[in-house]
Image 1: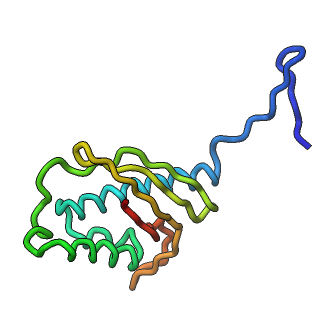
Image 2 (image 1 turned 135 degrees about the vertical axis):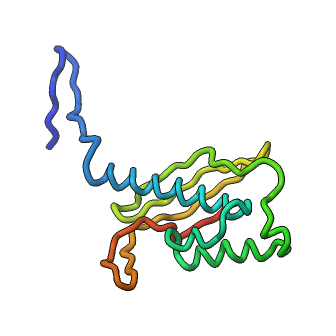
Image 3 (image 1 turned 90 degrees about the vertical axis):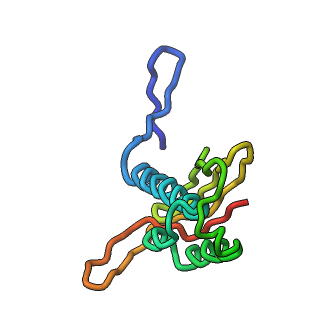
Length: 145
């Protein structure tokens, strides 16, 4: 049962939900991860960053997908930065599926051309040799259309 408060006679107002707490914090952390990782990905695809910078923040499947896209270009072009304007992230939207997973979609732009990006980010436990396990948001799915 919801409590309704009256501010003025004849008006009602639903109680306000908290704008802080675990769901909001999880969404902020997931969105921050998506923006940072997508920025790295477009820099890798542009040739402005080595692909090894992606391995800590994407799954093996996403890393292989990006490596395949780089291999499709000729070897000399893959190592050289792409000519022309750099790719820029324009908009990123996030839809939380749970406190540990979210779907994202948005747009990237290069000059006058705009392309869509979409995928999934999940909070995963990462284990490194000699270090304690940590939880980190990782890109688990990626598509650029």
